[in-house]
Image (cartoon, rainbow, N blue to C red; front, side, top):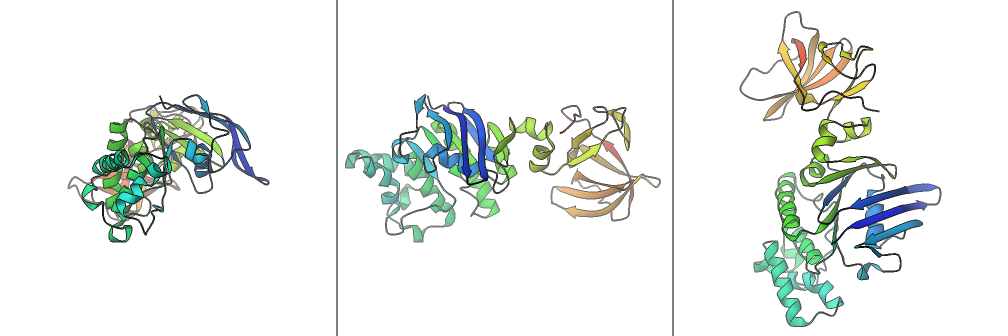
Length: 335
């Protein structure tokens, strides 16, 4: 079992609060992502679990074992950083085996574990190369192999893909999730990339200013967020007011919570050209599989996204009607 339990954990630097007192449990084998803006405390939280940063108060337990007195090398935690942090004078195999040597693992046993770890990340043929001879994606795979070769109880990943180009990030993201599932290792993944957080996670913890704003499964946080912060952070959205009767002024047939604000994703708004339409296309962006419109309707600007299926793209200035596609969740108030 590799459950992580944080109880009353907190950290401040002078008068600046990095982590407000919080409780958090990460289940055995769970893939938890921590998205949030820069300075929200997500990296500090991860560093405290790793033992690199000491909390001011609270307890950290892994498998029920109190980590307070243990240095990082005694916590059996695998770390993968944004910068790769490879030793340039060591071969790939030597980099991966470094942690095993520090643990005093016998040479033959260590060599076999290094080989197995490199095979898991498809780098076994490159074992004799040096980091300078590898691409960025290959270097990140070496860093991942180095983290898993020690057979960690917990895998901590701090924005490990952010230095890579978009296509490679998407490719390695799939590999990373598949690897975590095969190993069944408990993982915490820090990122500022909302799409990455949703694609990888079993559960998402959205953080801001050292606090947990909202948590839940990716689909629930995206489709039915409880807070405006989470709604706006996890992708584009329209936060709009409903009337006292709970109706959208521009789509009165759709009911929502009475007298509040609701989050409506751009893809949930259908756009139809109409000579007497209440809305007007201000601008459009062609995204390949979709077209995104900015539409003025009664002084409010909304974003709507239509899947590109060969229908005509509506030019700027087109008068349109807006209707709400039936969403998977009912409209609900965001605080």
